[in-house]
Image (cartoon, rainbow, N blue to C red):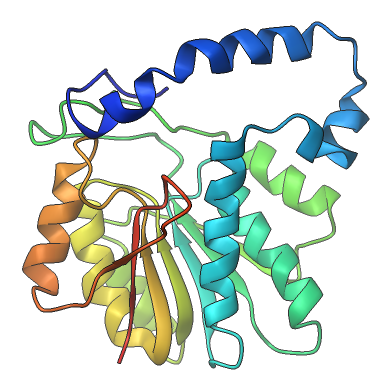
Length: 237
């Protein structure tokens, strides 16, 4: 995993890593074609990874009928952004719902508050992601914004002042990123919309929890009972 071993939340799942990687090594030795891994992915993906995307799917379903776009802050390899784009193709083919991904594509820059996150982790090549989006003909739904979430959102929303969201997925985990995202996305989240926290109440990202406590101390924070991450969400009243 992309972080140092911890003592609390991480330990709950660390015992599963050995068998998981043993199984993964065996699966990769079985000689399946790359296309098999894509078209028959439930045969290969682990249940914890599957639960992660089921949680995102459930959050998306909560927003059906709510006006606004979808945003992911911290795109990495695009799994969340592209999942939401494909869900809009299935459930909202005639709406104007778009998916906006925000990332600076330089990896994590943790502070002393986040000792379990590696410098430069979660870094993806911007051009490769854009080619992936283009290869799937999703350019008309997905818009990737290469910017620094700690400093560039104010200018972005000055330029796009009309923009409203129904679903915001905060997948960065760092205090300075999360607090700026909350300041700019929360006022633009439609009533009934959902904001998702990937690492709330987790030792991996204590800064995320601090940012949430500071910005919305009275929020009704709920959890996904069947998934280990994302860990929490808030529905805007």
